[in-house]
Image (cartoon, rainbow, N blue to C red; front, top):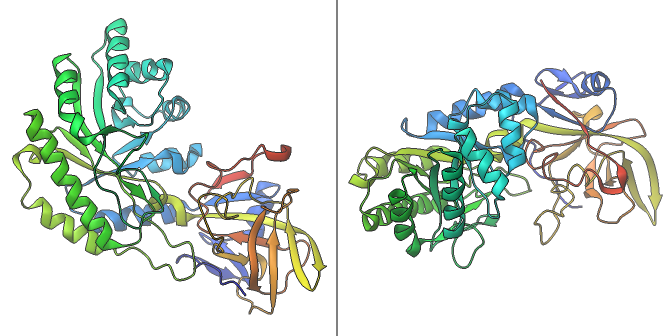
Length: 408
């Protein structure tokens, strides 16, 4: 048996079925008209933002990194709860514009920005987190052509990393940001060129559950920002401190203690250096805000036996849930939180493998999981599906197409 990950708090059973925000899984699938289906709970997102604000110092502002989930109704809902949004492509810029979100609430990071993306962002009043000296100079040239004053911040590649993070974004040679020792000179250059300097963006890693590691990284981030500003001879208007707050996906994972993180940050804020005294201070979060609020529902279309093992074959799979299949950064595959949604409160009675409909052995949703007996027609729920599910999976693979999505 391979244990399943922990099901997030906030879900219940109604008449034996999984309920999401008080609505049964089968009712939601019927409303959608088909499966597979992503369901996102607006209330769970609101509760997460509220609890985060309560734990963090009042001064902290929150950005939503829309790469985690860019479903238009969800994006519009989250935009009303947070202070700003972070994008990483011209396509995401088009999404925030379509949602009616003002460019002055948006920052744009990511290496390899094309000239047309830079132009669109400058025209919209978006803050560009430039990733190299060359990108900064291209942005300045484009702004001059447009006759606009660009908003530029510098993304820093720090000389430290977020320990224990699932994906490291800083420290050592990286395609992201400008090496810390070169940032002061670039800051002076872009200020002298007449741009609106918007400070620094320091993002070190993601998916961390260790409060001590985050506390250490945030302290290092504040110290580095002060050092850069001091060397550049300027006061920072803004510091995006990154995020990295993780959620429990696997057996043995425990939730991040955000109260400890917030208390340590509040203590740091009591003695900020002059370079940061008046800076806008942001956290940039994606999965932490929306990940646990999403459920992926997929229907069993076949039940079969092979060499003594049971396989539950669903109409979903890795083309919508790449991470749950183990193909999005896992070295050793572990099971996500998963349940038989239509028998949510039933006791486990068998070991079963839950697989998708794709013609590849990579398409697995659970290996040797202890589950209630399930038959064709039953619904399977994959939890922690609110981030990097629909937005990060190859939905076009084998011509399968995207899943339905709904915000309730």
